Image (cartoon, rainbow, N blue to C red):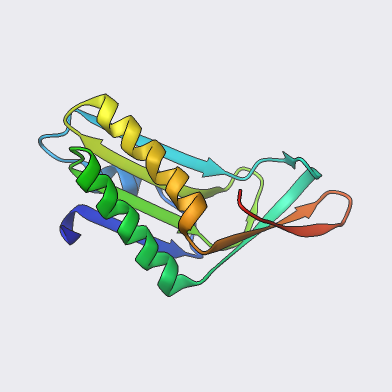
Length: 141
């Protein structure tokens, strides 16, 4: 199964091309790509940047578990889940999830489930730097 899964927590910029290339498979009739990006506002106000911190080893273990779950619950062929850490600016990609499957519905559903599980279960934390100079940790986003 490990040859069907790509997971990584990295301070390097994320590549949607890498994720899509990884999930490409001869039996895939659909590939779904989710890209989470840093936006310029939140409930707290204008956002200038984010800082992501992770418990890297446990985060990668949880990402592998989530990818395995996607492969078990849907007829998904390959899964890529990559999350960025460190300082990001508005527009930067913070997370990329890609799933390939024979049919689009399975690819969409698996990809959506992957990001929801990641947000809930993976030890990655986000700190927002606000335009007014304040900064705070965002829990459970």
